[in-house]
Length: 390
Image (cartoon, rainbow, N blue to C red; front, side, top):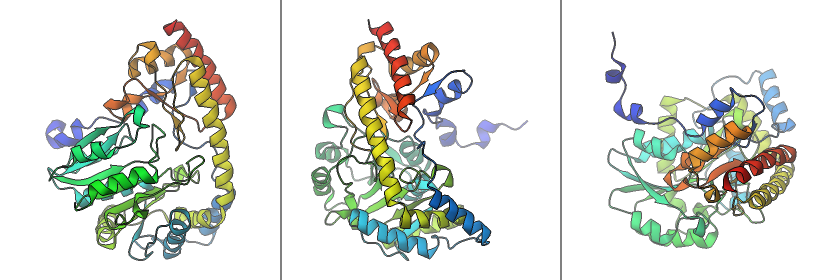
């Protein structure tokens, strides 16, 4: 009989499954559960985008595309990055279309990390950076960001984390799960620390459109930073296109050449139908995106006020579509709070520890749900908090 422990690599076997999924799996088996857990827009993909995808199918555009993506899409992405974020890229050499932003992150890490190399990862943050680093043979170096710093990386923290083995720094802003952002002055301070190093910045900007009352600043737009930064973005969050699985990476040509090579062998190309749909999204959907952002902003204010009212201290998130309230008043761990809340009141949220040890004492709640949905979840949570915290 085959011994799978000997077949499968120790690194893969030691990699835990995503902590986000556990409570959803439990909730799926329960009745009358209301969830604030999924980071997925509740808006349908804009009709103009869907119709462009349908039209491409009707026209028989179902073949492989170029490895890097169809050229019109890369050209439109170059124009989009310029008008939105003051970034200039050559569409033929510096832009790669990927299967979601997650593939782009994986490509970046695999392209630069050799066994023993270090990757600096701020946490709490999205769940993929640490395991992807380990799967590449790298060593994650964790920076625990703090609520009192609005969950920003400070130059002092970055300086302390750097070593001769550092190959990359992940900057996950706007941040899932904290809603934190890095403003220009914050990024300028980090760029000073990175001067004279060979550290590549992997800037995950998947929530770049979702900043409230301010314009997103990419580290690549700062003097001297474009040459060391790969910008990761995609269509899932900004354009409500999660199931289309389309992302992209933009960066220096020597780096992008290697990312494209890995993509070529592993994937071949991103889905052609999704690429034609995304082209329409970039050309025609600014007003639709703006309307969605207005709705998220209303929900953001609603959920933050609601958490503070029921006694869960919650700072106002400046980006993405997540609130990250403290549950200190309950005296519970994040896991304990989420499990008891789910069984007692049928509300699913995600423990902060799913995003790193620094998330202990917090929960993540998504506000990409209707106002009525959020109000009902808050009502139930208020009953639960009162029952456990007096």
